[in-house]
Image 1 (cartoon, rainbow, N blue to C red):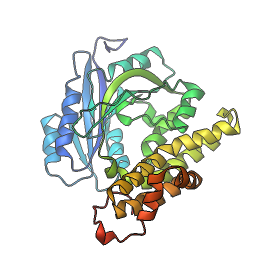
Image 2 (cartoon, rainbow, N blue to C red; image 1 turned 90 degrees about the vertical axis):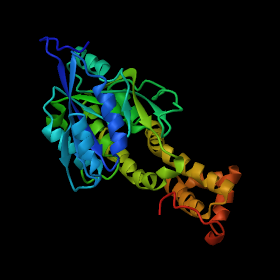
Image 3 (cartoon, rainbow, N blue to C red; image 1 turned 180 degrees about the vertical axis):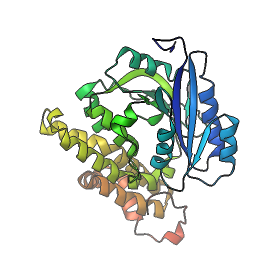
Image 4 (cartoon, rainbow, N blue to C red; image 1 turned 135 degrees about the horizontal axis):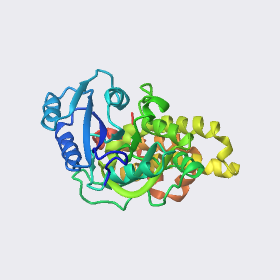
Length: 328
């Protein structure tokens, strides 16, 4: 139960959702939110919409959500619209294409009730296919700990998904709004503010179905995300230099913070080699070198498909016309 410890009134949670032209997926997200409500828990749903789909406002009204429109691109501006209008005791977040499980919210609130010094709680998720099937094992696989351990984990590759995040309302005043200048990485940037205050914690409960997409759909986005995540790491890791117990630990954390991107581009490169996709090879091989140039050089020797992808770059694209999958 999440009845307030001081009253018998239900807890009021402001749920903030950024959306962009995905009204059907948004409907699934909203249904999963309303399904969790009960006599102990009520939701104020705030949708920040920067898209043009006319059905978005209709879907919002269908589920009793507040709808706010912005012309500013990016999820930061959309989330900030919700943050500035939120009136709940707690703040919760979910992306418009994800789905909460029935176990969401109450475990995070229970930890916040038990730990008054904590302002933000992260939980676990299961990544799925586009149809919300084919669930991957719960993530993160290893508990990230608290305090310095949690901060090291977040700087070393643990990215708490916003759909698992619940915060006290006062976090808005303490940590501010999302950075609208950051096209990517603004969610981790906001979460790191509470972690750097040692006011964040983790609860080992799976609360979210995180809807994945086909690997080739992430190419352009991941190429642009690399630099934002690299800057996120360097800015915070250097400011918090006291948490590093050795230079090697710092370097391992740096590698961990962007390794996902390297292996994604390496996978796309090898996929290009197997399918003969010249354009995908031209996009993904240079992107892998951009993330980790020395590792990519080594893999030209040790990974034959990566080497074949490099050679494929120099073939004529007209012989293998493919859809643009990866960064340009």
